[in-house]
Image (cartoon, rainbow, N blue to C red; front, side, top):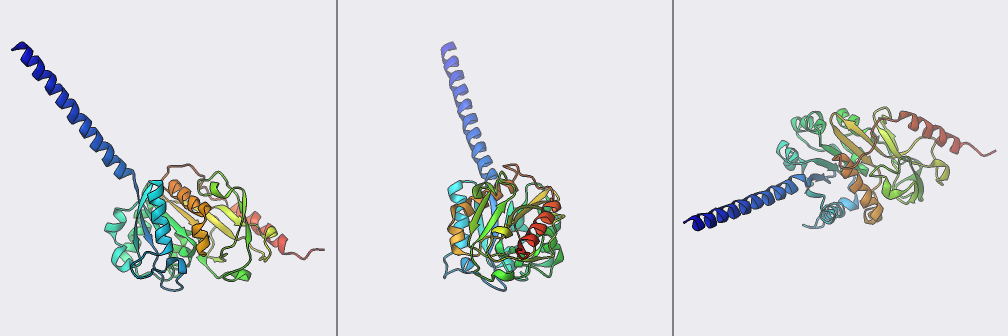
Length: 293
């Protein structure tokens, strides 16, 4: 009997340990699912619709395909896509998302109470983030709380038009997760935005057009990327992304991935406003536009 009891006891311990290991494995899987970043990607256009955001039948747009595949290949996040904010941009959808990403234009028909919740509550929570790409500043331009959040509004393309010559970008903070892929300086053929309602006192500029090295010039600072804290949440904006080739560029993909990691606090990056840099870049741009003697 004593041997039987010992065997039974040993079997009980083995079974208990097995249940503990199974429970631990389940807990780790649950943690992994919990740690996976959830992004709500909005590509709705109420004004100009970029080719990169156009769907063909049931097929997702290039932006949707690229971001979804980036999440899958990195294992970092999963994406829910919508082009119908009236239906899909809800408190419930926001509450199961960590980051909202806009590649949008126009006065999106988001319900007022939901938009207020998004800007005044959801986005100010720790761990929440907003990722605006290219035309996100050409969105909700009549809604001041939105453009105050993102930092400025689209005001045309200046002397460059839709398809100007390549321009040179200076990376002010090459160690920022969203800037590392670009190096300290790069040339790109994309679309430049001129901004109004620009608020350098609220944001940290990370990249700017180097007017001295750009063929067409304007005597003003042209920021290309910036970030900021927003309550306990975070905001990142990148103006690049008009051209299809930009979305195929691995540096652009890696930059978005770095921005997502920064938004979630997975990699460090300074977000303190640097209006003095904007003032310096403004002075440099004006000097670059002066006639050569």
